[in-house]
Length: 304
Image (tube, rainbow, N blue to C red; front, side, top):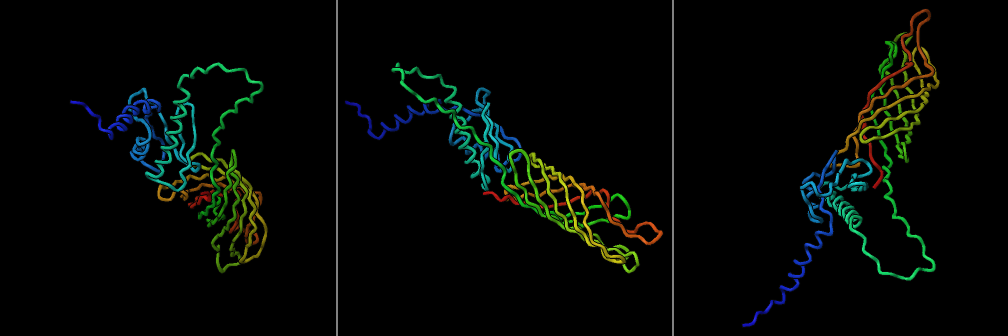
């Protein structure tokens, strides 16, 4: 009796024989996640496991995923680092994008680890251009951002009242720092209404700041000018000037990755001031020399 191989089993046998070779050509990895990410560790393992070998033992190459910021999701595998932009994707869709980038890093690492194959002898070339170095991974720059914030500030003296603030700004990230332009309004409630030293104060403010951002933190420093109008028992217009510092702490949410909610602490120092007082009496109203305030706001990234 003759033995006959079924023809449909031949391709299956070839695929089964080639599977170990394909698996060994790719570096086995072990994932570690850190920081806030737009997907869960389980979603990342599901997406990565469909593309490459996953092992838990210590011999596997470690891929550190995270944290995520405005630029994207950071990846580290040995000496290699890159940033993966996931845009508005979250969940398993974002995990698949990151898994593709991990597969590329693993493939590059596997190629570097393999011993070079001996080349057959060849005649010396007459002229040969030097091999160009591989292009470096350019760091992704965060997108421009606009934001608005409501708050209140107060001077150090009792004659310096609480002042409501509303400010809107635009942030342009550069290579090493942020440039921020701000426009706003300051309004102080009327003091001593109906009296001869009544005072009502409102001012517009324009700021130019430079800042540094690290994850959820942003520090801004810069000068300001504030044209004002003082009305009541006496009317006056003028311009206040000074400089300020603002510290912001923001938080993003996976459901809206382009939106940031933040709280802020700011301190302003003034080079001049205006006050209202009756003749021979202490001032009943004055703008501050130094004012501190708190605010809350929301920002939107303008990038894709």
